[in-house]
Amino acid sequence: MGEAWVILTGVPTLRMPYLVNWLLDLQESNAKTWMLEAAIRKEYANDPNAMGKLELEEIGRRAIQIREMNALRMSAKQRIDEFFGEQPDYKINHLSA
Image (cartoon, rainbow, N blue to C red; front, side, top):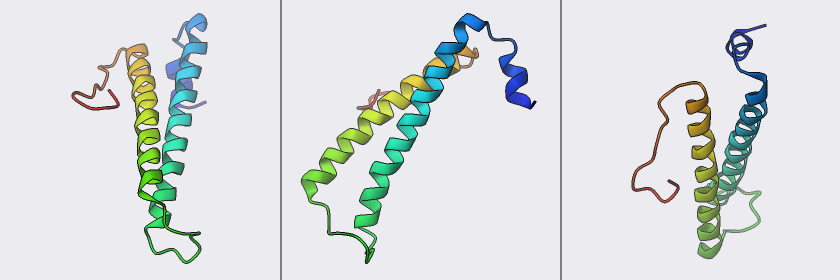
């Protein structure tokens, strides 16, 4: 069944929903960050299909959304690390911390 199954067989059943939620948070934050960053990259890569350049205000709004998604991502990663007994990765002096 694979390595992931072996790891998860030792996880208490009552804690499994937490792990699933953290993994979903991680997946959601990664996907949303990718979409927000891709829109900015597309507008500034001289893409002939781009509708027009993003205004600086829109880029700023997207940057704030990316920071918020990174905070969700870091929180999920820390909980997953703690769940498996690993040392969590903490950001220091960072807006998404």
